[in-house]
Image (cartoon, rainbow, N blue to C red; front, side, top):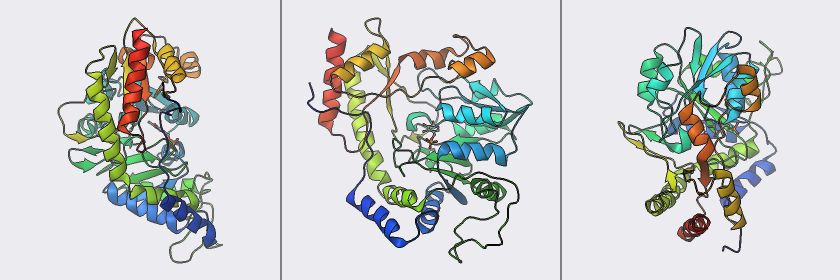
Length: 380
Ligand SMILES: *Cc1c(COP(=O)(O)O)cnc(C)c1O
């Protein structure tokens, strides 16, 4: 058994990251300033997007996206139930109705067909998730969406490519830089888009409804005359956080290459462990995964998923659960009357998935420890 606990993830923070954050702290300008603009420019470049708006979180981005699009009572937003529940909560909190699209049982991705099946005349927005770093068929989804906007939940997908182009290219997307994501600000998010009107609205909503940011590129500060156009929120990112994200972004390729290498070791090992089933790859398009998570399904009468996770923990192996489906959580179950069986593929996975340790500072020996512990648990 391992002597030390192997967490399911751990952010990679280098001395250079720390120096960049320290430089901001020493600069006399610690909230949104030059590091924010630098981070926005780099993420926009990576995504082939005209605009990027830095935010305190992806959840905050989703909230003000809905506000910017004037989505509320009587409107429907399509997203998977297999997503981080904060995105569903935002739909609910603006008074709109979340409508859940089914996922493919093996890839855990929503599909053009599953989305087409739930589009109605009330659908105002579609938010597919590039689950675990694997892209959905975004062209197919946009084709079935027609005039309905599609905004990609790219929280798992910084460094993900679809048909040779980075996620967010030619469309709007939301990234997260929460501590567990491939690169992190501690907490943070980014909205990318080519729509200049939407960018303007997002900037206004993220900062009190004032038509300008606190940091003006030329003036180093906001004009005291700037005024509230419509009340807004306070979702800006600090430069302390942005500096960390900006420096991490330089290592994105190396970080994702390491994740891929470790994921391939897992895939090889699971060929000989039929009780534990990794996800399958989507077919019909070319892609490169960011390998945000290594998700497996505990699919055996020998042991259930919760016991499997608990037993691994006793052997000093941490795991995560991404995600418990949203529609069967107390609030949604009670409000909408959802019962088990309405989304069979989502529920099949929700009951069986767990995320194994995967982070850039992990070693092949750590992967062997995980595999050894899994074999040990299954042999009992
Ligand atoms: C992490 C995550 C979010 C939310 O990101 P925050 O920055 O923590 O608000 C949204 N969607 C998915 C799929 C996520 O994994």
